[in-house]
Length: 528
Image (spheres, rainbow, N blue to C red):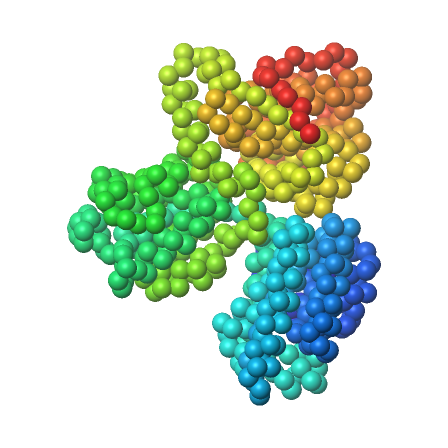
């Protein structure tokens, strides 16, 4: 990954982001000071440009001058980001804190707020733009402790060592949101995590979750968890309790989280590591895509020993007091802009439970598939779905023939010169969203993947047949690259008539040519 910095200050202190952003090798480069507009008017080969401006850039003239500069800056950012298909990170401006004349101070604060509003509008209008909340960080750390006027005057380096780590973490978090797959599941203990006390001993009316201390802290924590659920993160309950006791707590108490908000529940006396493995199997997600939260260090240790790939964090009422700040520090939990599929995630898992009920009552797999009344929608080079397509390429591991990862820019580039097929599945229970992606360039299937949620319905067969039908009389080549997680597709191309032309430990190469169209099992609709 290549990150570029530009600004009206010395940006070299931000180069230490490589220690925080866990994405292999990160290359950082810095433009000269005061080259912001020159950079924004040019081209860019980096994955992200971080443009850091202080309020001094805008406040060297009157209000009209400052607003004009922000209009110019915002327009240049959007043109640069859209033209280069590159993520641009800009920063908010802090409110002034020193005052000599009261009305002038208020006017200056109003101007800064207006400039920040213009930045917000820029990010809303351009999906490539993210905003780092420099103003919020300075307020949290204290303005005087964060700014060195002497260093600013001498070296154009205004930030102190007290605030730089927080600014770096903000930039790293944004880049993780943009370039790393988000965690999928939060696994939550109940007693002394979602509420104070032990429901099995204290009773429903004895646990603490309400409007008074300490219960209000747990209520705030639940509020934050509910917001994460609304953004597409799945919540699951893993607690050593009698299930009926826990269910009564959710049903009888007016809490932000309800019993039905959990995608899976394990309330029993089995080891929590076993319950977590069971949930991962039920939801068909990798254990490394989950985060476990529990107040008991013994439970944390047991899970960490059995499931070292799982992220585990110990919780306490102290963390509940700062719920948002604590959750914000969990790795890969936040998201910049959730996709439509993210927002529908909880409903999709409810629908999947209905499908599983139907499957258990069906007389055969074929009858089950027919009874679903599936429709597969296929689109080609739909730039409005680039976020979801990119997301799938970065988090799909099992049914993925090459496990190639893409940025949004790389997907758009593939659309320019080849074909990027996306596949959406609907059935009698609801819309599963976009579940499959095939990337074809230069007559090569370079990516073929499908979400595991769609497995077991022969959807993958129709996806491949549809793609092959687009290349009648034209040779196609394809590759299978084995990983620890994708052995289930090791023979996928072999079983569909592809000829293996080269085989080694690291990959298998195939070719295919057909002269007749394949009949599709399901109803496939082409959409634009």
